[in-house]
Amino acid sequence: MLSKINSQNFDGELVQWINKLGTFKTTTQKLPKESAIKLLPNTKWISDTNLISSELSALLQKVNAADRSDSNYYIGLRRRVKNPEFTNEKVYSKMEYSDTGIKLLAIFRYWNMIEYFFPNRHLMDENWDAVLKEFIPRMIATKDQKEYTFTLLELIGKIQDTHANIWRYNEVIADYFGQNIAPIGVSFIENKAVVVKLHDEFKDGNLQIGDVILAVNGIKVEDWIKNNLKYFPASNYPTQLRDISQKILRTNEQTISLTIENVLGQKEVVVNTVKYKYFPNQVVSHKIINENIGYIYPGSLKKGEIHQIMDKFLDKKGLIVDLRCYPSDFIIFSLSNYLLNEKKDFVKFTAGDIKTPGLFTFRGGEMRVGGKNKNHFKGKVIILVNEETQSNAEYTTMALRVAPNAMVLGSTTAGADGNVSAIILPGNIFTYISGIGVLTPSGSETQRIGIVPDVKIEPTINGIRSGKDEVLEKAIELINN
Image (cartoon, rainbow, N blue to C red; front, side):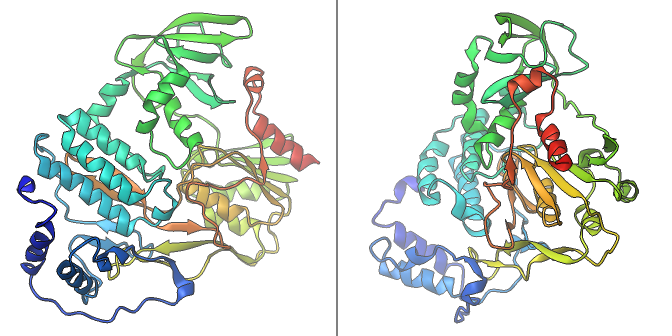
């Protein structure tokens, strides 16, 4: 069918297809007042008769003015939050990878979901129309499941959203990076891959914390990154490096060869691997530092534990909230109530529209935290952030930083805030997008940019080798000064 349609009759085919859908009522489109609009639909092209025929243009303008209801079989907005819910899309879990129609459906489905219901489409580096033009022939050319999956992974990366990746277990991706992993924690420090932890499963004894990894199986780390960066969707480069650090030591072999550098020079080491697993970061939920500083690690909190903790910390000189993690409990309002003696705005949202796809408006007023509390915490509050600070952690940072004497300390966060919306593409490819826009009360973006620290500080290789947490030490210094 596709081969029979050329540039001369394509518009006519579309006119016939649209007319077969039946008749419908039209209405005068009423947009919200300008101050309420964040993004307008990109629909100017339907009036361009240099691009499409006059007949098709007139029909599309009529479709654009159709009288639509708030309910739709394929798209809804979640109650209260208003992030999109993509419903009733066929998964095609056993698709044939020779089926050009299904492969094109995948790219068109995703492109349209982003074009009309992604609140951050204006923040992408590349033109979304140009991306579609690039990926149509690439998708058609895919020959098997692997090529199809990785082409979609690259497409997903084009929206530059840390929430957007291929999630859940995917055998193709797992096989590509490897089913095994060296039991070593790696972080990119000073743009180098540095050993920051030796997990319990590490038995080799030929590595030390602070060693710099120069090459993996003979491939220089910078070349590995260059070859694979396109397979690591994220809002910004530091977060791409964060995700790379979790996969660069994966392999399908029982061992992995590393070229490392330390204070004694370079050497080659061979490390035994284990079956790939998640290595949990065991950190206590709270502690007291130097008798006068309370420390909270929200990644280990039990539900409701924040109340017991703050009752013990109210008389301390300072409070450190270490959000270099993902909170295990939702503490935005509960902790803020201890830090404020008034209500304060900390965020505003944008959301999409069912009746006018592509329109994004500010959702109500700003969200507020805090309230009357004469016994609120009166010391300094230091919030620690880095590329591990994502989504709920970024949202929590936004809320806590409005407290008196609060300061955000650290480096670039993941730049993916807001509730997620799930998308399932043909072949049972599962992904998310950030489903609502999240902005500061002044209207500045948080997506991709992240939460900008008041004081920027990053770990150093020398600090890692000395066993120091330089970010935490800086927080302690700021409280005591």
